Length: 301
Length: 222
Image 1 (cartoon, each protein chain N blue to C red):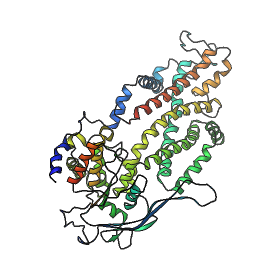
Image 2 (image 1 turned 120 degrees about the vertical axis):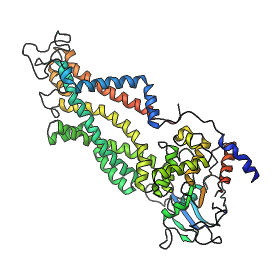
Image 3 (image 1 turned 45 degrees about the vertical axis):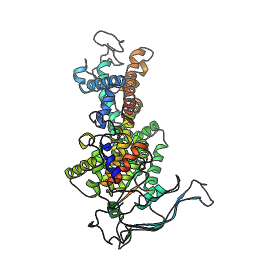
Image 4 (image 1 turned 60 degrees about the horizontal axis):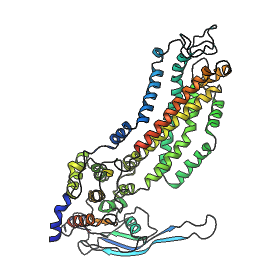
């Protein structure tokens, strides 16, 4: 007993005591701030979103107002900075307005699918083997279709229009999100700290909310961000095929389709909506990559 | 563990002569990876007929090479995995017995310190929240009361609450994390503490400190 008492003072000063404690999200934000690429990408994305929101001020012309004489003007035409399309409408103004629909079609389905698929995935990951089998095998059925094909099929059945585009894309994205969430939840569920929480006699809802969910959300966020770019591309594809947004509304995929005929007359102008799609989806992909590396905190940097 | 200096625990039922924990014929066989179709599936006999009794105020050590089922036994005792067969009697009450106590009641009185100090702490929660989780959710303590208990326990295991309560597990060293583990296990004021190689992952000097700490808490290991 004497030895124990003598050793006690050691307890207090054994390890160095570091700086101010920081929360997990503060650390993530700090790491993001030092990541130049992600910051740049985020600024570009914010710019695109701001242009879409403030389209009436950013646009130089009415996006629906054509001109018979001023058709397919090249890039750099005075008054029409990015030229005009096949009915003489200003490309810049249409791109700015089109961003609204393209972004809505890109983000809304992912949000809805993350809510529904995330819940299903958690249930499958945490629930019993029977529940897991049921959910995952049904998901496999949807997963068996290529996503573009499935979206086209659903849109073809329920008809064209922006609401139906969002609905079909939501259905398409539920399956992969369920899969990702289920695998994350299964991994987290088997970790020791969940076992420790169970050992502390805590009720299951508290364990899910406080132990499992915080450890799953990060991975879901990264995956959902990467889906936004796919969503933009598929919804543009649906519009291109005439299954998405209906003319004359400006939407990037639809514009690409309409300008297709002009590809030999004015290839630069015809490619512009594609460039917009490319930049936006690339930015969401890079943002997702940046988020993933910033949130992957194993050891203090 | 039970406290020798606390013979009049309100929860004490059988008096000092009744074993705190009585285990008879505990058994768990895991299916091993085998053929998918046909044939008898190979079983790993992880725990096969373990019986022991633990008197109040005493310590029981379980020795064996790695992979011989010590950790599995510990998890079976807490019903973290369901035993295939066997009987666990806690202070005269059969666990899961209609006249005995439920698994939940058992866990409120029996806690465990895990072997891996890192993976047994939620990486997204602060040390204070980790310790307060059990009292808050299982015992229904108010937020403030649970936090005060967590701070008291942190102090008890030699981590200043002002410095450590708001830290995250990845900001701590191995020894500090194992202290948090011990504090978490003590947070429900258990009558029995299971230590699953609580010091095996630590270096010698830290190991000595943790063992001294456990001795101070009146705790010892199974």
